Length: 206
Image (tube, rainbow, N blue to C red; front, side, top):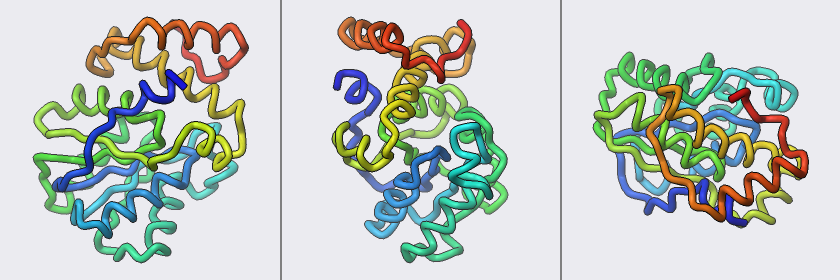
């Protein structure tokens, strides 16, 4: 799927100073962050996120809290997992996680953003705007679109999220929230088609 592939940055995993696990409805973010920690790619991570309408029922104690609990269950030591439980958007994920790291005495020059697969491009653009002095890389579970749909179990939710994230990639640079990124014509056409088909619940007024 064009939009699915476009959302991913296709960065090669490499060692960094710290990771930020971006809160969402997808517990696979915490699973993948734990795998990357065990692979030795970073010594410390921050899980960031409060709640949103799409996550309140799934993660009643907040996205970051549930992510941290899951990472600990997977064997990540508690001292390696910091918590940022208040962020309500991606910009706050970045800036509040930066503050949590600084409070712990961690001042990274490179960070790995671990997110759901279709949030990579938007989170990268946001971090480059909000934290320009650090080197940013992205990672997500290596899943094909059909496999991700099966894992989440909600085709409408995933479709709405794909469309909503792409709209934000397009619109947020105009608002000063992210760096500009070009969108290929085929991706733009697919976006228009999905909007026409009703995948609109995550669109913002523009």
